[in-house]
Length: 270
Image (tube, helix red, strand yellow):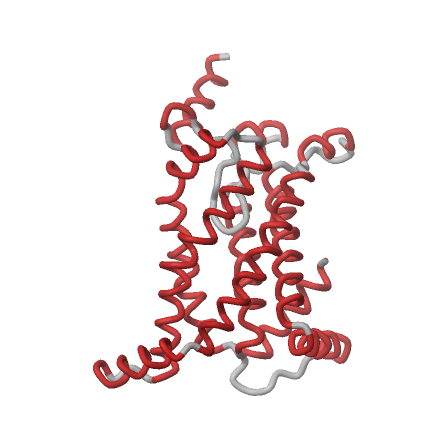
């Protein structure tokens, strides 16, 4: 898995470097092989890439959120949720396929080209930047609310066994803050993707960005060094894939922060 991530990082750096980037021979061969797979089997390769990075990103999140004490092998089986990890793999792979197909449609769309031409004529926006703005707006303001988050919340409900009514209530409570958090990260990422990255590598670039985002959130939510693993599990709600999503819905319409304050108060009283 780590080799897979290294290959993706090397590929991204070589794509975005202002001049051709010389990679070490083994890594260069791996990047070339991956590029050939993108050409020969584009959707399958993009879906597999998104799946692998989703699985690894969730694993890093779980490790950072609930790392057990050294040598506690019994605790390892308790804090790592394999079902959740497999759910994220299915979610990442499925959306990777959908995203790959959407990118292909947008990159070939006459409507996108016409909108970019209008931006160039009316606002002197360069053609490639105009097209990137239209594609980014379509993905972030249409595809993400209409496709990404419904699939995401379906995975949450399946992994945690929520009945339909609780799943809908949970989604309604979380959708607005999640959209804002995702847009703050993915709007610039997606725009740079459409401006700088060749078409066949765009899903890989976004998937790698999603992995980085998950890692940032996992470390940001880690407990202080003095906290034990079991204390950390009590204090920190684990985060999921692209956005910071608590795995348990706060009862009674409480925010996650309110729930955390109440838990700390109860532990202090005990």
